[in-house]
Image 1 (spheres, rainbow, N blue to C red):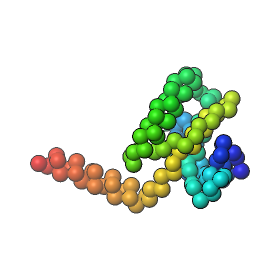
Image 2: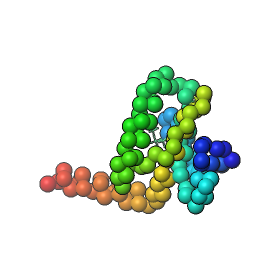
Image 3: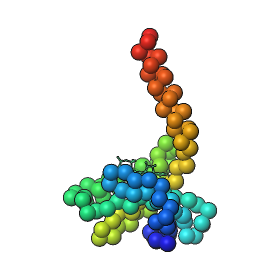
Length: 114
Ligand SMILES: Nc1ncnc2c1ncn2[C@@H]1O[C@H](COP(=O)(O)OP(=O)(O)OP(=O)(O)O)[C@@H](O)[C@H]1O
């Protein structure tokens, strides 16, 4: 298991990856039933680290709002090569995403027909 502060994850539990990061499913060490998403950002290609830190501060401020549409940022840790963001785990089902996308497409189609 890999550790990020009070949280842990296994590299086997990969959720997905984006352009700059990989995201793993992890959990709280104190409360293992609390699942989290741990985003590992490689700092190799990040030239503006200060900007990344500023963005992280904004995410922390947004978390303080406790809004249902804002993914909470629980913790943030930095090593020489990586930045780790521990976030609320969003368990969206693919079927929901597809339905949502289809509904949006239908609405757009209807608007064009009017
Ligand atoms: N908080 C989360 N809870 C659950 N899954 C997540 C969470 N954040 C990210 N993911 C998953 O991890 C994948 C990669 O996320 P990441 O934010 O690195 O990239 P992205 O948003 O897909 O693309 P980009 O790199 O262009 O921003 C996402 O597509 C999503 O499936």
